[in-house]
Image (cartoon, rainbow, N blue to C red; front, top):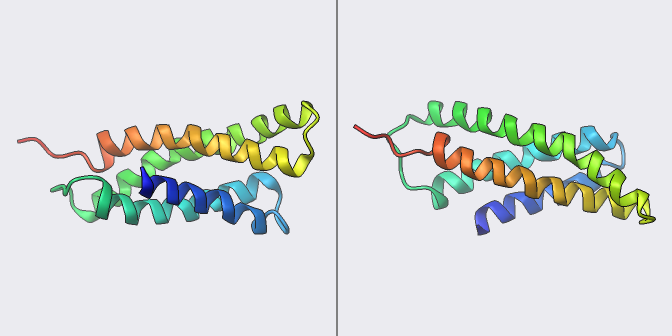
Length: 124
């Protein structure tokens, strides 16, 4: 939980400076990739048990699982931000809330994908 939370926090936090010169959806996507790299390192070392799956296979599976998570985050963030903004919340706060909520949704997809696919313990 701490490793994933840290990767998600970095993802959320790095989007703010990226948004100063990139459109929101592009900043969300780039922040996601940065968080993903941190997540792989932390998950593979401290969250999931060692696996016999070779590193290249783990990375390939990690990217595939994260593609699903990224689709959730990149799609949900603008939609959720718009919902919050329509409630009268200032846009900058709505974007932050929408992005955070989308990261939470993506984290659920990613956790189960990594548990079942990326770092699965191979059975004989």
